[in-house]
Length: 110
Length: 109
Image (cartoon, rainbow over all chains, first blue to last red; front, side):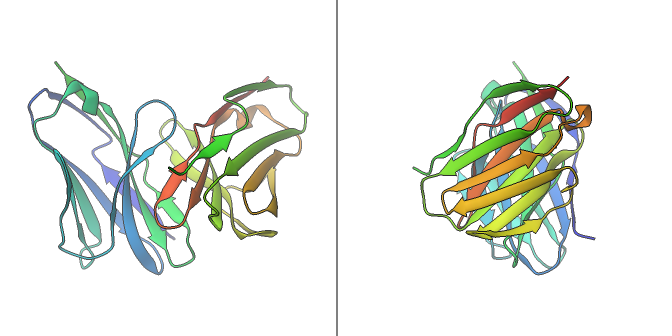
């Protein structure tokens, strides 16, 4: 059975802290791993990772994929209250299906 | 910018009604998806379509059907709405990454 598991389920940190969000996956015919940020309604795209070991970076956010161990991490440095959101990861398969994890709810306290 | 538009932000329907949720994308994507999102359960795939008139069941297709008559439009149909279908419904289209609509919060009373 295809599955994507995220941890922790929720996380509360203070502004300025660094956080690491985890995503492990087991899917048939894996193609890529995607990260999304969901604040109110629709998830917005952050990263798509296809190759192992290559870090993708956007400002204070970065992510990396390990295809051998079947996981990805999303790092956020110097967190701000605006980073408070649910972070979703999804594994994309060769059938173009997207399997989502349940998400990690991050709360950043001023 | 890719735009995915869902026809309604909020809907309230009665049990037994037939409900149509419409989704339109403007980037000529072949793949379109319907998800529902419930607290603690994340995003669950209802149906997806990889081409006009082509559809595949996702994880929770029971009680739903879909229609893809044109490439840009993917409709989700609740044949006879029930209270356990109260949820947030998200449509997405993709080429590489998926782009989401703003969601429809459906309440079935």
